[in-house]
Image (cartoon, rainbow, N blue to C red; front, side):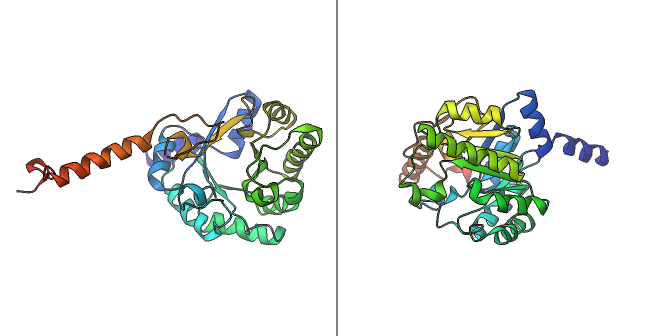
Length: 275
């Protein structure tokens, strides 16, 4: 019986191959960020296809203004936590700034650490033509790679802020060239962030690999959101985000109720005490 159960679990696990099938069949792909065991377990049970251990943890977990301070060791740590919570989702570890910019050999060493120490099923890195050689090298090491083009948060200083990319003919051509380079290098999917919806549609139709949009329109093959944005845990969310809950307000309400009951000696009561 245990053998049958294990086989069944493997058949239902999301893989690079099953994502390619989704693209061919026109079946949308879901993706969320996750940073710990508890939320990974919840998202996995809810049927989310991909969990990204994003370097966005610098913003939503560590309280930094950008993702740039996040280290490889920190992403590996959070990836380990997320992997423990999943049975079905494919876990992608985000390669942080400084872990692949030096060159392809540096990139493959970082990717190997993400898989061996973090347990990641795949890695993600930002950029197009300039990181194509690194993608090829990582793929040659038998590690699946997800690309990321358009608005790339690790390039915030070069871009002069978090600005929509791909506007105008030259901007459109540059993002398209990057997306094609990522595919040619061997990536199994690519995130399209902060680009006009029409460009998101064009790239999704041109590429054979799945596109995962975030602020890139409805025609991408899948969509990703930062969990804190989706759950209403941030004070501010970008215009392209749709909050599906307001857990921040619920948490605040619960804490106030707890504080009030403790202050007035209503908690713990007899039902919550040992005799």
